[in-house]
Length: 103
Image (cartoon, rainbow, N blue to C red; front, side, top):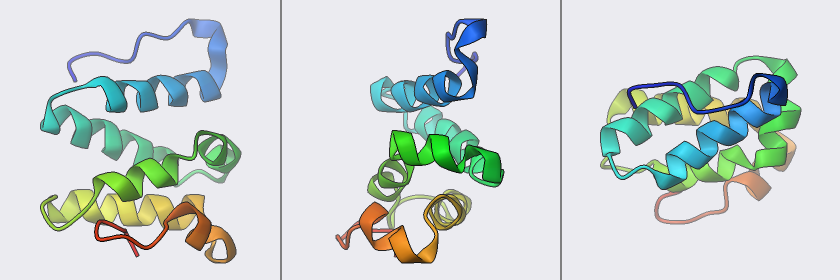
């Protein structure tokens, strides 16, 4: 990921997060995917982003892309992201049990 996602300035936070998700889904480079995932995890620390992350179901993307082959920092960031974006009562919905689940 050598540049910011291409986003019109007026699209706002939801548009920017959607651009990150799209970039994550479309990129072939594992390093770029990890960098985008780290950016999304950073957004999850801000409570004002919770509604947007829920709309984008970003926790599901995070859970699906983390696993035993990812670096420790990537897994930790993804875990923090999904925990923040999905409070305990709804976490099960966001992170269904699977071999690559973040739970």
